[in-house]
Length: 368
Image 1 (tube, rainbow, N blue to C red):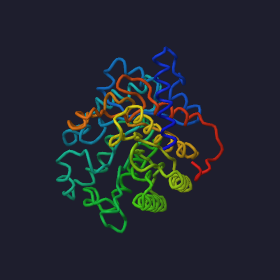
Image 2: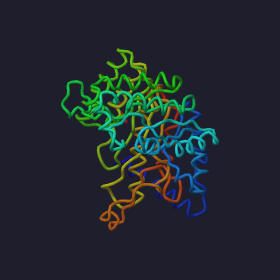
Image 3: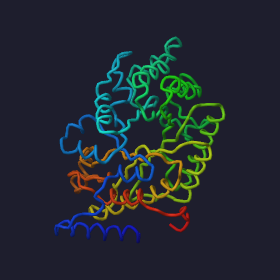
Image 4: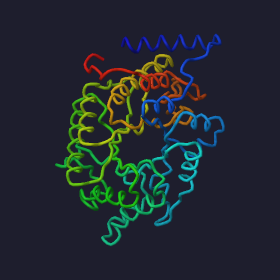
């Protein structure tokens, strides 16, 4: 509470300074600050965002790594069987290349965002391998040599589904059994051999016993996969946090990240944002809580030398989905990301900047 109150006071002081014509500090960019630390800062985006002539240059200044928010998911990229629409993703990749950014693919294999016909195709013994491996060969092959990384398999673990291997009872599991994960990664490696191959998931950031179990399950899954030669290069930790929910347990997160590093995995934060619902309608209080949650998370993440990238799931609140009508009547509008709806830097931006620039010895976990 003390830390959040201190941030709230800083927010109010900063607003007073801006109102009085005093320039805000930290005039450089998140991308530059992260690069000085040897880390890539990036953001999710979409083609409609790039059409905003005020936002696109800001994105080009702030980010060094881009990922498609939704336009590389299977339902968007393969609208008809075997007919691929690479137009939007090429637009995003061209924007990234033109502005000196790297680009990553999200996602090749997921239980969501699939065309409705997919389940029927997987029911056919003759077609199912083509439906998985053939798709990866087509998509990763199209972008071969141009990708920083691929989220090859996304969110494959659900201990609550009751399996001894803790795998999600997805359409992929029903069609292939656990072998679909090996097939996906080996196909991606063969197709785009120089891209970083990532297993991407969420649920390892929280403090509860449920999160403890998920961390253990995740490490077991990754250790077993590595032992049988599955070419997983990195763990993608989504980083969806709550401003007014349970705080990140820095000790537990620190130990989990060290365990990933000891497995020889690199670490990417792939979808960071901070949900500010359920709290005060006072924007200074909400901004303070969002900034503090991000700081607690990133201070631990950036303390680990295996961390290579931090991406937020968007850069500006301008493009977030609107809240429901009841929240709108209350006056709530989400403030989850580093820039507000007017593209002004928020406390989250400043605390991220501080995390990137902090010079400190190994974190003394337990005293934070």
